[in-house]
Image (cartoon, rainbow, N blue to C red; front, side, top):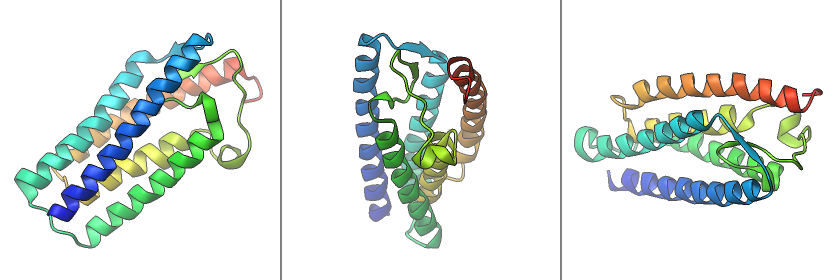
Length: 173
């Protein structure tokens, strides 16, 4: 159980660092005139992800007394994959990456690297595998399924609206 709590603690720390980095990026972009869209959606998305982390840790400590096994390893592999994608996404977007939907005046449409193959790699290859991974690591089978359904609703709404927004700014999108 302590190994799993340690893994979840490390994952929480990594995600906290990305949130701090996102806030720094958001401040910088807004100072440069970026406009924010889908504000409530961003808050709900972040809150749902945090809830998955918190409830997963709670379930490990107080409900499941989870042991390290093949399910945990599967979750860890998914989580590591999702963090690899996050690094690709952040490095690909550079100064334009944020957890919020921001369009800057100097915004450039990315069509190379991972963006050549996926329009929304951060959502489909980072957020979704990360949250599944966290749920599997913790075996949080009570809270994660319900929260994950909520997450999917939030994400699919976001992708639909963000795609329309990107098409309005970048006709070639």
